Amino acid sequence: MQSKSLPCPVRRAVALGGLTAMLAAPTWSCLAADATAPAEAAPSPAKPKTIHLVYVDSELRTPGLTTPERDETLVDYKYYDITRHIKERAPLVFAANALVGDTTVVEAPGPDGLPGFDFPAGDPVIVLSPVSYAKQRKMLQTWAIVTFAVTPFETAPVDAATAKPVKHQLGMTLGPDPVLGVLRINRLDASLVDWLLTQTLDIAASKGVLALPQAKAVRPKA
Image 1 (spheres, rainbow, N blue to C red):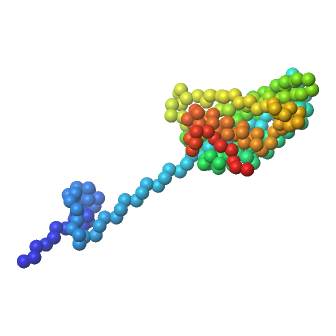
Image 2: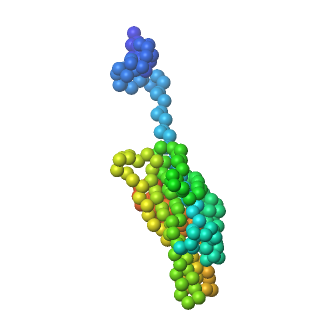
Image 3: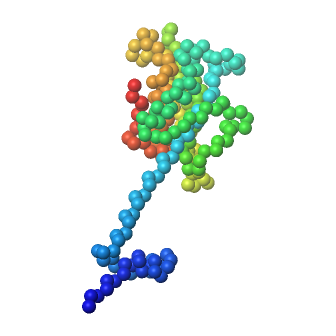
């Protein structure tokens, strides 16, 4: 007389009815005639966090003056085009470094400080703001050195009691080229803003706020 094959544990679980029986079933494998268990689905990759770049549009004025006129040197060196360039170049710099990011431009803070932002918890935030500038003169040549504050942080730090945003200083020099002199005037353009943004990403990466695919942030290809 032909012996009957033992039932598959999965089938036995169904016969007993319910998940509890499946977990309690023996761990031996089914016979070849039984259906094989479906392969486990591969875990879905984690969604990359969005980097939120907040640029504070603060118009720099001539040191010591309270008049609303723009500084003529900064006007000549195209500094006041920076907001437009940041809006245009930031997505390209993010993409060149395999990052997902967006850009928000706000006006200089008033007495109440920066406005609140409703960014998702845990997302990296980088606040970039011009804070001061100075002039250097040598004979008929004039340079303008603009200083930016870079503040990277996370919207929900692991230890909110001790984790405080740290402000870093970043300088940009506009004016005659160090080598060519007045034959080449370094005015603010897309390439200089690319440099500013990659330096900003490097600072954020050094603080562990974001991860770069390489050692340093790279500029977009021309």
